[in-house]
Image 1: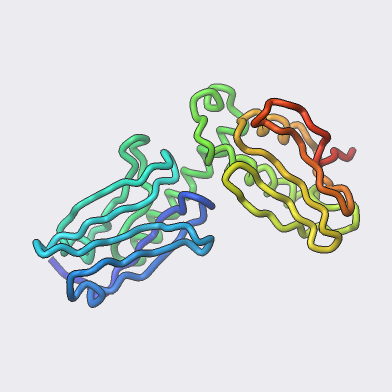
Image 2: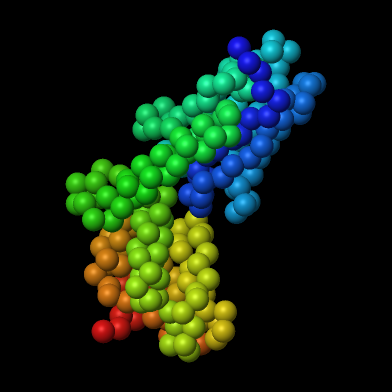
Length: 230
């Protein structure tokens, strides 16, 4: 087996869904120790722990089930020619790989495509909506819808700003206008929000106001945070 000096870690962040790539050097494990990697959003991605038995323990967060997964493998498999699969035992899907850069990049591109497909199905397929209720899929579905609105130039603020800041929070997605400080809050703890957003042809924030589309935690319909424009 050929042992490489450097391997690439590629995986989806369990919080923001971005595909992250990190470099792992064999020299960083010359002695017993622990290496941790985080996403650009600040969420922990993966931790590797080196043992005396020439094995490495891997703990990583899962975008599909929301739970941490643990794996113990031989040290040489981390830097081998074949990528090491990091999977979700609950969904039986890969969340990332460790191995040669070119191969990891290729495999992770497929991971991203499959994940986007699953999220898209969640926004449009009734059966999938009833089955796939993980909060993150709702969040990702919201982001997918917002992305389509941006492409059609149907997302903005009445002050004239069409470049809104999007922030992902544990129970909501916030739309912020940096010009007039208007804010829109989309609660993501209820999958019905996906149907509501799909029915809207455009989303426009009210200038200098903070508005809420609905409070799904309490089940009450509040004053719209976002107004629909013809």
